[in-house]
Amino acid sequence: MNELILQHESAIRLVFFISVLGAVMIWQWRSPRRVFAQKLSRRWLNNFAIVVLNSLLLRLVFPAAAVGAAVIAADKGWGIFNHLAWPSWLEVSITVIALDALIYGQHVVFHKVPALWRVHRMHHLDLDFDVSTGLRFHPIEILISMAVKWAAVVALGAPALAVLIFEILLNAFPMFNHANAGLSPVLDRVLRWLVVTPDMHRVHHSVLREETDSNYGFNLSWWDRLFGTYRGQPAKGHIGMTIGQSDWRRPEDCVAIWGMLRVPFHDPRPPAPPT
Image (cartoon, rainbow, N blue to C red; front, side, top):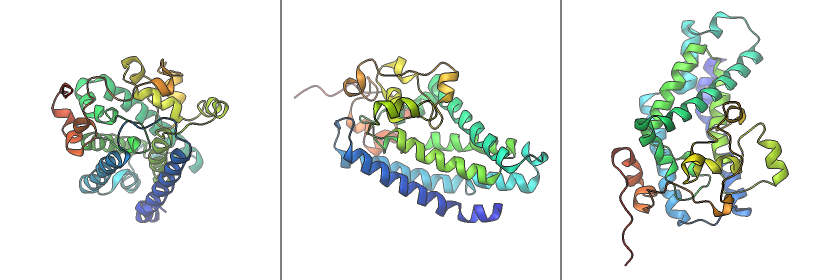
């Protein structure tokens, strides 16, 4: 079973990725929440270029990825679940929830540790908020995140199926909750008791620091409520709020791929004076 999952992992994840990406693109095209401040084609070209770069880098540094770590752990007998005889459904459920909690905690740490914030802030420098924002992370952050997942998967002895499910969710939900689209207020209120909605996560991309340091969840919304980092709405409303970081407003730093890649290694420059 594990070998079968590992053999078809890339194809399965790609099908889900393309399906969710296409659906969210159509959704935000048909029901846009905000007017874009930047030219869409330029943002998408650079944001998706980062996705391609990160995918190639991960395959180079972690050829087996997180599912591969689960298969290796099972073969070697490493990790908690490989020494227990619990029902498969229970191990899968615990693994998915535990890894989601881990990603929440990792996200908080990336905000609180200055050196890690310098890396993570590239995600926050997008001057707009849409499906492509949910995919743009600095390559250094992607490698750190995969190393953390590897360690967690091995320590748990996580089932390969559970890791595959989690990786699909970790791709799908950030595309959903970064959509430039809105749900009806009633549906949004109901859904955000379980999962992170676009209106919930958009708060996290505010220029206001107290709003940036809230709503850290990617998949499940429980962790923000449990640990007191939940914020219901932005102070200026979803239409009036400003996306990004107040001291980074130059498109060449925030939108262009070369500017994004060098974000961890330099400080923001003041905007060019008006001509």
